[in-house]
Image (spheres, rainbow, N blue to C red):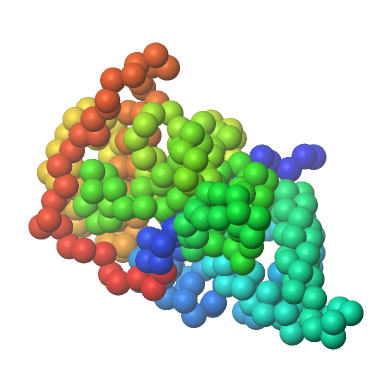
Length: 328
């Protein structure tokens, strides 16, 4: 029996763009590799659940590769493996390799050796992750474009110690998006969006599913809904007991597409669910998925030859309570 289709993705952006929050929301049953206390803090404060985290996270790329090999036999149990802040792991790897670099004829450490190890380890990582048979996602900080040691321009992308590797990792991935703030995005809690424009020479982005590039608009910063909208058969299970979130998200998406005011709709949803004793964070989670689903539906409804500037409807509400503080 073959494994279900799996996606390989990178999400990069400035700090506190809710990259961690989105991967937790997209793959709540997955195995998370990162700082355990930070991952749990974000999941509990933002989404109201405790994620499955690897208790002794790897500090270097060789350690990460060892971990992936050790869990490969049970990877299907998780459905997804998420590496949170891969930039840090790469930077720690370089420090380790610089300390171990062999000396050349001059008696000085070979300064190129750590970069060779970086390239080799990233190649091994790509090959291992691709054949795990589960979703594999890495979050990175971002690195702006600039010139490499040869004087050639390299675009911005995931923050890696070598500019020559910035384009290499995205080339292996199905989805590579930049996390940004979009003031026009209709989510009243957080104006997060994913920038994905393969024609922009300044940033390395792309999406093989085509969902993030349907229009010139930014996509919702919601990996779960992006994958769901791709109709690629990706398995995206909810936490046991929260299956109702998809039904509510569907209702919200339909009302959003029909042009209902976002503020009025969310107040109505909150009132109608008041007697159901639902955790407010779980309710907000479903509402945010519903808004993202509605935005993606509107984008998909545009014809391939409709080049007019689209409008995303719905008014946001400054009166709605802000989400709890996050540490991602």
